[in-house]
Amino acid sequence: MGKLQKNGFQGEAYQPQEEVFFNDGREIALLHYVYSHPELENMRGHPQKILDAIDEYGRTKKYLMNIGEYKSKTVLDLIREVKPQTMVEIGAYVGYSAIAFASAVKDAGGRRYYSLEHNPEFGAVTTMLVDLAGLSDIVKVVIGSSSDTLRRLAKNREIDHIDLLFLDHQKPLYTPDLMLCEELGLVGPGSVYAADNVVKPGNPPYLEYVRSTVAQKKKRFAALGHDGLKGNPNLVYKSEFVEGWEPSGVPDALEITTCVES
Ligand SMILES: C[S@@+](CC[C@H](N)C(=O)[O-])C[C@H]1O[C@@H](n2cnc3c(N)ncnc32)[C@H](O)[C@@H]1O
Image (cartoon, rainbow, N blue to C red; front, side, top):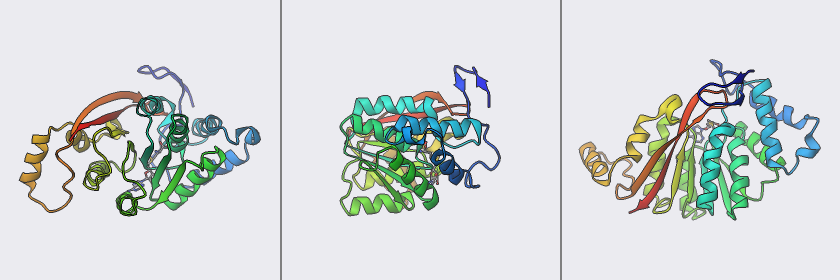
């Protein structure tokens, strides 16, 4: 733990990221930490207090791969601007972003926050912490691989339009999952995407995709000539890079993309 004042990062950092930094029991340890917290009774129904307790664990116990309070600010500003009725995140982990963002979606008059997670244990931790935060009425945690879940939610007509999409799962899946959303008609003009970790560890194929023109996308797809995911190359995107910091104090950025027309 330490006070970092590097590259504009101010405040107390999370523990450094170790070689093995998740799925080693720390997620269940976090649940015990929160549920045996001396302030537990004051935390019930207060999203910010749950986030503070998760941050406290990350700072004093073990690193957690959460978006953290610094990069969260960018997404919170977007939520206030976009006022999404439906927001989807891919990658729940222990529920930090779900608690931070669903609370803001609720405040902005939104209807539903879908939190997609393929690890059932992480999904269970998210569900417990979301419940403690008093957000079970808006958050739906869905367990399964992102592509299967997106297909099912679209097929069941549970989701017909994603206003705000937060991508925070396996980096090589950002582009195919976005293309799948395009193909399923879940995104279109007015949809906004926030993609995390575009510096650390980075995601050049995703940045290239969302920064391409319609003509470039069509040309690339024709050259590939495959019969896999087609996406919707007609969607016109405006995309920008917003710098921030990992909760461990390491510089990172979000790519914010708006679908401006089709
Ligand atoms: C960086 S963590 C998410 C952190 C969380 N969004 C936050 O900021 O609090 C990435 C999560 O994505 C999940 N994940 C990875 N690939 C996935 C997939 N294909 N479908 C659903 N979840 C996936 C991992 O299990 C992990 O919990």
